[in-house]
Length: 501
Image (cartoon, rainbow, N blue to C red):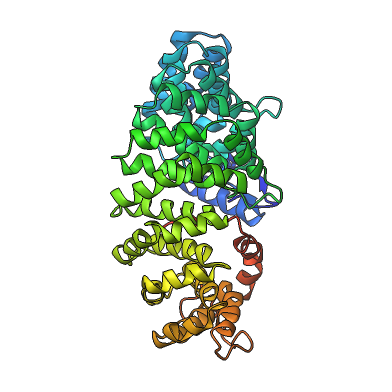
């Protein structure tokens, strides 16, 4: 992430320091660069935007910098041949150099790329190549990605939305454009919001209408739906994603998603993204009801039945079930129909996958909440054993254990006669161990132990300091993680994208 409050040094200042080291102190280029970096870092400067490989190498531009400058000029002059020629050079040379993305970004390629999309938006061939280069530059490079927010009056992401809208029939542009948008919007509130502000919904609908047979386009539209509705940017206190979810659902995109799910029912990769997109929109009771009535839930259940062995799709389906189960009718449908059995089967099949188990616990917890009749069905189906076994298999996973405890609590709080089944399987020791290991589990453990009728006083001396803890012996990391914990406890859960550990 960003270094809050750190000063940035310009490339020029850095190069001067290197040159001075070489000329005045007779250092080798390598030593001069190392010394300059140490000097600036001691002053608390952030050097993430600095290219070290070119510093002190004389007046010649690095080939990437030279190509970048020619590209910027060609865009200014709207010189199509020049733009195409330099795009080819950059696409080849940037990936070959560890600092290539930074050099091209510092030389203005991101802004010029956005400008090219605006100037040549009727030229699909050029736009597709520009979109691909932009994707290359922003992938794993936060500085370049942030350049898509500039200038405020018309940010780069706006040019991308407009290009997608201008060339709805061009498959190459649609695929590259949505792939780029999906990537750009991850953890960036302002890019999510700007894409929608510049009418990003229209090209999403057009793409699913005109390219429903194209798996890559459909997959990337689904992924874009998911990233623009996912509140994963913790640097912001206020998020518009809730409004975006409503706008997408009310704007007529969902029936197109159901149609695309039917069309790609054999392709778990596509279904995974579409289920993620639906989950992002399932934020309000009327939207959830529409998903139940118009085929969204049925499509997801069919996807899980067909592709149960695909862990990515399985976890997305269950996270969608969890959001739908905020609605009491959906809780009943999921529990009384075939979904519950499929979920438990899936969780037994993927017991080693933290991602699948966590998603399953989240869904079971939603289905049990305030629903004693559902709990009877769940206990009969063997849910208690699946939950306890899952906790045993993943003692090191804090979010998984927290969801498991919420699930157990929701099942026993109104049905105390089922406490015994959980306790006989050894759930008390698991909860205490998780509480003593993970600071984030402390509250859930307190409630869960109390409702199981166990000893629950206090948080335990070890809360969050046990053997799997990320916080061992480090009080200051606790402070830094306060913000993360505040977010982690909110109902807008965004952890499904965490890497497996």
